[in-house]
Amino acid sequence: MKLDPDKLYFLPLGGSGEIGMNLNLYHFRGKWLMVDLGITFDQTPGIEVLMPDTKFIEEHTQNLVGIVLTHAHEDHLGAVPYLWPRLRCPIFATPFTASLLRYKLHEAGLNPSLHEIPLSSGVDIGPFTVDFIRITHSIPEPNVIAIRTSAGTIVHTGDWKIDPDPLIGETTDVSALKKLGDEGVLALVCDSTNVLLPGRSGSEGIIRKNLIDLIGKFPGRRIAVACFASNVARVATCAEAAIANGRLVGLVGRSLHRVDEVARKLDYFKDYPPFLSHHDAGFLERHETLLICTGSQGEQRAALLRIAKGEDRHIFLEPDDVVIFSSRQIPGNEKAILALQNLLVRNGIQVITADEEDIHVSGHPCRDELLDMYSWVRPKIVVPVHGEDHHILEQANLALKHKVPHAITPHNGDLIALTEEGPELIEQVPAGRLALDGKRLIPYKGAVMHERHRLMSTGHALVTLILKEEGSLRCPPSVLLIGISEGDHLETLTAHCVGAIEEAFLSLPLDDRIDDEKVAEAARLATRRTLLNFYGKKTLTHAQVYRI
Image (cartoon, rainbow, N blue to C red; front, side, top):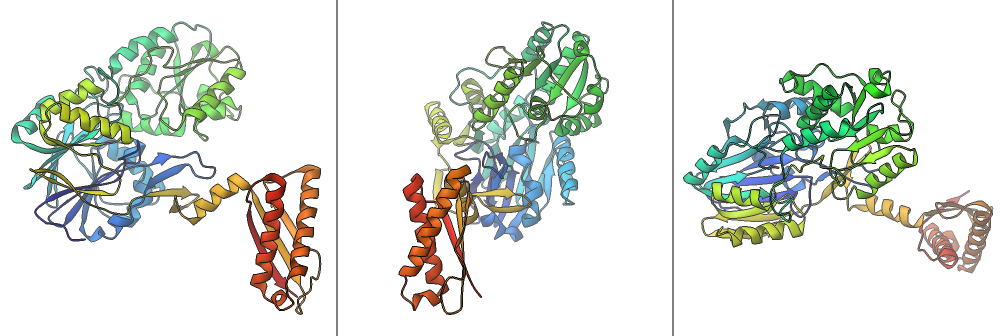
């Protein structure tokens, strides 16, 4: 692939056509710059984490000048410890993001070149001049990234909203965004998550008052609040609510303690006494307890689900205790969240969600906020990202309706030239997903995952035949049926399979009985037909032959 060195190109490999797993690439003068490298989560048994397939950029690592991280959410930096060994380039981030990333890299045994960039400053990375511009979101230090080149300026928003009272950190640097607009912006690459919602996303400041009031309604009862660990402002709100209602805060969940440590190091929690550890919080009386827990999305290994199952050694919830979900459902997690909430209710625990009380605001811009951004930046092109297809199309239409000259609807793998005349789709490059399977990364749509899905759908049958050298059976075939049947029916079904295999073997010509591949295939087909006749599914079936 040969690209014009004087043109500016945009290539998403994750986060376009989906929410999460962000990976965006920019190309200019023969060099590539990556913005964000995130993960998403999966409900496939044995697979919890998915990330973008970096095969394309791995072939160009000699020209990859760096990874710029907009903020510290997992869907923007969570893949770095897994994929950096394939890329091996410098990383650039502001202090909060860099501090959290260091923990992850240390756990992975990695020590890349990690450059900590002061807030509201910039850095030259190859042919790109990158400025970090203050914005608001549901985590400290989110940044709009302005990427300046002689071919034009790109404004890459990352995740953002316009919060007039963010509680942690400063408000959006509107003057810097307007200055970019005055200088001229070629393209705005923009978050699309809430484009379908009218109005504005709301302020974190409003949530503080509501949570303080809500927690005051349950004197004498133990209260747990489930929220995202990275939402430092929400954790601070819980601390304020605890103080206002005579309670002590206990943190339950490893990621909460990590965020707490980083937030205190950077003085975001300087007004609060130390939070109690998981262990110490278990000794508090019910009326003096406010637990902040991970697991608002029903994650299998997070704190709240362990507590609900009675598997936590230190923290217990009793009937009439209260669990407050100060969060929204991430698409794809609905079943897991509902299962967790139902388990809590069955245990006599009162569950309160953001659908019932005004205790959560989104971290993403609604339509009026998007229009504000367009008016400040005044781009020639809008490139919607961070959304499913209908979000991306809706933002493209919104931009065109409000006088942005050009818009395009990208999908992962679309190589797009960004020019004064408008965007142009050049070609599609390979894009996909990698699954974290234990300690290894495998293609999410590869052979291993295909068989994993078949195993879940149909079960597995394994046939073993032991033959004499001349081609006769030394003993009856062995049939192992996994995930197909149980009890007496399993014995009956196994016997039918054995009979069918013996019949198929005896039906083979004598010359074929000394060919292991033909014997194995006959046994496999006989078993598969028998299972299909019995329960109507084409079972994943394998056969093996040994000669003695």
